[in-house]
Amino acid sequence: MKVVDTKGLTCPAPLIKTRQALNEALEGESLQIVIDNATSLSNIRRFLKDNKLSSSEKEENAIWTITVNRGEVMPVIENIEDYCSVSEERTGKNVVVAIASDKMGTGDDELGTRLINSFFKVLPLVQPLPSSVVFYNAGVKLAVTGSLAEEYLKEIEAKGVKLYLCTTCIDYFLLREKIKVGNISDMYQIINVLNEADLIIRP
Amino acid sequence: MKPILSSDPDKRQMAFDLLTTVEAGGCSAKISPTILEAILSELPLPFDPRILVDISTHDDAGVYRLTDDIALILTTDFFPPVCSDPYEFGQIAAANSISDVYAMGGTPILALNIIMFPSSRIPIEVYGEILRGGNDKAREAGVSIIGGHSIDDYPPKYGMAVTGIVDPKKVITNSGARAGDVLILTKPIGSGIIMAASRMGMASADELASAKWCMKQLNNEGCRLMQKYNIKGATDITGFGLAGHSLKMAVGSDVTIRLSMKKVPLMKNAYTYINEGCIPGAAFRNLDYIEPKTFFEEGLDYNLRMASCDAQTSGGLLISVRESAVENLLTELNASGHPEASIMGSVEPKQKYSLIIGN
Image (cartoon, rainbow over the protein chains, first blue to last red):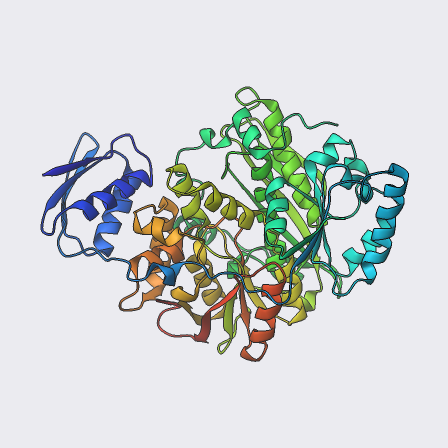
């Protein structure tokens, strides 16, 4: 008889091993499951009962041995797709603006500063508005209190545009105290926002 | 101030893995609802007409009327690490604590940190990272943290006591579901299973990242839309699982709730992991709790039954909505950061069983 030794394992590992052994067992074959913790014991008992698998138990020095008959065919997944979460549905294009610098374009820094300020001045007038603006690297400098872009950022934020500011970048430029707009975000969030975009604008 | 630890989650994990402080499986984090209810039923309830909501209806938070226009919402929640990275743990714990205010239809305004931390056993930078995560999440919610309390203890635990405000006429409660309503769930379930599967080396990094993303997501948009659509009955799904919280709402509202499990949004591959036996202990505890008042329909898929009992951390809102408004509410939820929000159940007049779970 095959023995599934779960001693020293904590929940849910004993149940995973039990499940696996039951899957591999032949119809009508019996298995022994050895368990040394009360939580896993109670969970495995419950699992066997709910799946209508007959079993017997014995205990010796707080080690339980459950003998279970594999019985009929275990329930199988008929169509796994039925249970997977549905894919996202979206109306219209999801446009995300990624601001990677506090200047627009390269060539002349002063010109680049004027251009990026002009970009944010015009952005609130664009229809439809982007869903989000992501700021990283020196881009976060545009979102600080007192920047020329600030009032336009507040305006688009009030119109429902989400602003995501890279937390690492804010700390790097020592700007944490000066940020009053937007959501402070980590890389997971930023990647998620970019990943969900149909179109990314990078001025 | 430069961060003490790298803000790159992978690098931070190398610094200190919080999951090494908790028993693999984290089966013991929450007291069984069966035991909890028995203890709470022994305590006398305070009597004050200004108390609008207390524990007698198993609600998410207490509500106290200050004036005709303002009621206070008070709630607290804290728990041991659910993930390796301290910053992310802080974010998740804060989102979870604040969620109870959103579930009552309120605006969270203030919070106090509650932290237990073994300062001699874990690098103190980890403490700072947990609080930084909590702080950033609180800021995202518009909540000011104005104090807190810390205790030297192992394993670490973190959460908040959160205060919110709400118009007393617009409080959304566990007891506001009405027969004929339809149920919407705003976030997918399965975070307990995915976290366990990740510890067992079964779940992929992507699946883990999506589960953490869900847990970090605030329920603020759901709350805003509930108020827009005049919702009266809702709850957030946390440790007692979808089934446990549905049962609490059914009992609180004196109705029967029917869950259609195939319509419930599930996190990717959560079904597969349950099928492979990756069922956290908390799911069995929740199953014991709901069983006396629940009817499992003939032929209910065993794996879906266990999914309904999976304990969630910082789960979504379960919203009871009149049928005429359900389409519009769902469309707006889907467009407001909840693409997986789905109609997954209904509210019926009270029957023999308070909860009915079917495929």
